[in-house]
Length: 457
Image 1 (tube, rainbow, N blue to C red):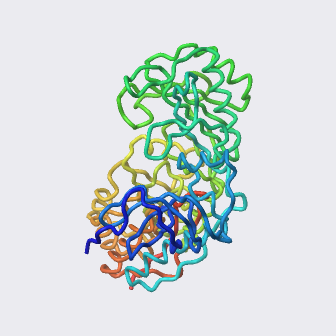
Image 2: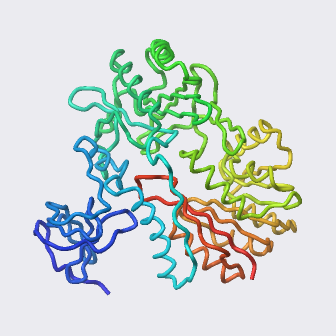
Image 3: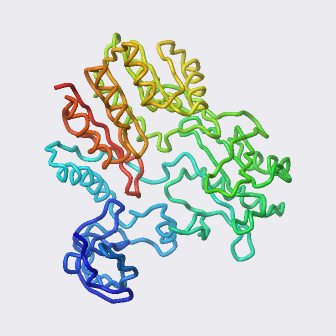
């Protein structure tokens, strides 16, 4: 039932924040009509101005806090830009409160679906900042000067930044070095309005264990002016840089990288480790951005899989083989499928790199390949799924359950689609065993990963 808005734009109101949305916005209700308010926590009484009033919900901006939640962290004035850019939207919450909020996200969705499933406390980080091992930073002209930073939320207005808070500090340092070199040699930043200029983005990848660094220039032009000067300046100031690449993207698109990447210094890849396995990481590789938490996430998946050295495992959405190779050390045979052919090539290379010969990778859509394997009569003991935010295709669930594995281990990055898919598995005779384990891969943000074990009835 649609509710007519009891408030109007620019109206000033007072009230108490009742809850948080899945995005971490405070919920203030006026006659059951919800207003979503940034930087507001449950229990806080605030004065706010309505900025948008839709038919079913609206938005408001906090003008004044009359009471303050014990879960609030005061944010320094210079750090408020991180919230403006959407980099750390939960930085105003204590970390303990963030972990409870993420557990509550999953619990609320399960309750709404009338599913009585326990959710464990969120597994957090000792140091919940400076964790990201990859950055893709836009380069734009701001007040007549080349700047690096991040876009203001819901816009393409650049907020200049030097400290990104959630990125590895070595990455922040590298971005400043590159920015200053671009200024020194007068390279023009990209202008979206007329598609002019040269430098669109700077990409930096940092090995957590290896200390290897890769720097990438994403350009609007086919050439990179002053390439040798840039290489000389970077390697003099950042001696741990092992690879510098040039990627061309001259299309009017929000996609950051173009299809072709050329190595202009050092190696084509950098290396890092996860759970003892070594991985070659190229400019375009998908690799988890928080390696410390990824190791915890994957170890939980391995533990829930209860593998023996005779078990056959299917890893759907295998990427460059991170989960597959971790499980291959505990299983008989592992079969991985991934739609991105370059990722499959990386996965095969990573299997050789780690001398694992009990793994096979196939390039295909997961749902298509699962149907093929089912038709071939494959009988896996365990199926591991780590899908994108949209969750699992229903045909994949159908094929997976037709193969009748003993266990399905579901690694989720979206509680909403996880709950939907749990219901679909239940319709086909699989139930959740033990509590769902949330893992905080992205501290200071609302995103939450989790691991769920399902077994046949």
